[in-house]
Length: 316
Image (cartoon, rainbow, N blue to C red; front, side, top):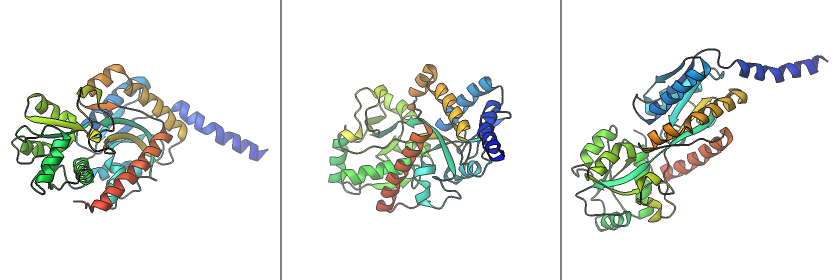
């Protein structure tokens, strides 16, 4: 009888906790400075949930350590569902291969849902005499080691995207790392570097003004908002780079809380107005189940780990 009663209580406790959740403020940790795509999405989620739950939902920016500082804060937080992480893919798929983070990215977090795909575009200065991915590859093959590609640093999404382009295209370019995208694009416009693969929101204004030529997008399929712009994979079958953002909690948060947050966040991100507004900036809002997201992360981790090891890419 006592054993049955104990089991019944254990079954009821998660339901009782879920019924009362949240009872106090929720923190969304963004491991980057304010103003970028992760911060924008986190604040949209927080604003909606604060009205729905009648509890404060606070976004806290914790940049530094290649996003590892903010991620570590969440990994070590109590598994009660009140501390979340909204972070880019490199925390889970790249950083583990460039150094030893103070956490296990596959074991110390509970995936909640993917929240976005970030459109990455391949561009060159208007002065470079190429108009397509095929022409760029032919141009680079005729001039091995003469073209420079920029990135936001060793192991950054820009670095990995261009490294994959080189390996699949059979070309050799020089890597020029910068401290962020802004100074790299500043050098790209006059042609001091000749190739850049980066986020659409920073490039579209320059493309519209004719200062940069758009050669292709990195996703497996064409982006509807880019018209007839081909995917790089149409010239290099199998090429695909899909930078993503995701929402996480510490490992061992009760599944009932994770599923409830997944449902609420999916409702917010599937709103037509938010989808249209961020879509115009090259941010495609997407959601999935915790199980599907966990499987996706493991596959992404394996993919980029293989490339980083084969290309001999080192951290800063």
